Image (cartoon, rainbow, N blue to C red):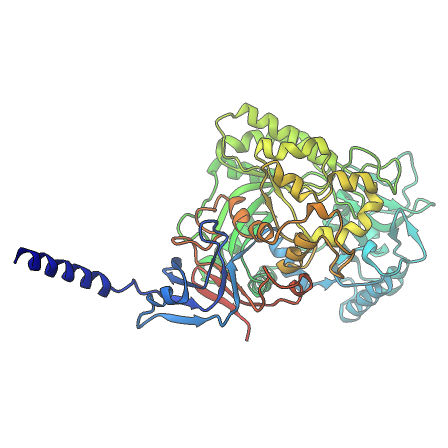
Length: 568
């Protein structure tokens, strides 16, 4: 009798367990190819979401248990899902303003650039400024007849815009191209003298007679840029709206803004308060405004631990130029310009001061360095600051770009725990002509060395530096795994031993990006309890042929469990 009684109790327990319903989800994705970036559970078919967080990950059958009366179900129909993509270095307002001004990113010749300026002049009033960005003389399919120090001259620009000052930023943001009217307003004319054209941290490019050619590199650009009328609040809002739309269309759910002032932080906060902020923002304070840093030193970092939509806890320092305009700061001369080693665009004493002040206050330092001299100098100053603050064990200091590093300095990234915030797309765009700047040995030994850095234990993140390049992550993912140009050259890729695997490339765009902003416990992988941030594609980027990566489309972007973009 006792036996049957116990059997009955056991049956009741088993029945109650089997009939217990799984917690209903707000949103369920089924029938997909899910790459989780979670080593313990690397792939799945379905995901359940509740309250903006991941409730469950598993097979379609398992996750279907979480479908309740109010659950929205999205059938992925075999599409691919990854964690939401994290752009680890770009310029938020630059992306928006690139859409409001002349976009010169796809210009193929100098004549085409002049045509675009002429069209803008025809629509402008006399005296109005013509501004734009994106030209790159080394990417033009043909060079102008007259070149000075590797750059075009403004003769044709002057012909089409005599009364309108013109200011066109180089794709890198490290040079500008201006017309005679703009130079006249800036008081720049014939500059014959002892050190012609030299400006602290930059250069006014002059012809053989000492006349400015219209090209200004690095800090020299500020001589003209400061004259451009300030923007309006309405235009700023329009630019931010356009930038956010571009990000969600490209599958980006989090964005590291590489250096902004208080006005941008306030505008992003306004969008957040109004429910218009569709992409998580990690904003670096610009080091170009010492008074801004002083204000933030007093109040400390702003870490958003509630909805994780807006955090300010890092400082961006611009320490050298770019390879394109020969502004990157090198240890040895440029191969194609003997006697020239680029520019230190920020005194290294400032890197020391900011690093030492930031550490005890909980601020991260993110220093732009492209040339090997700049990388070495910054690592030296980081190392000294860390030695003075031995308790700062989780600093996550970063070097932005880390494009060209002396071989002796590569191991220091891992040893010091410095993050290499790199942009793989720069390999595709720059490598064909960068060898002219650095020569073969420097390229092979220390340029775009992703594997060498990762083998030191360093975290390598990914991005585009938009609007230097289009913000689309897929070309950068392609560059990461092929080391080819976007035209598929050369066969096998440049310095192929430095390719990332597809798993490494995806991690560099997700979990590593989250780590670089201290958020790896909240996002960056598809795991229970983490943010429901997803990117969904029409092709399996982890399996398709290399060339198909570039034709893959983002079909849906999800942030905090909300669909912020869906391709119809």
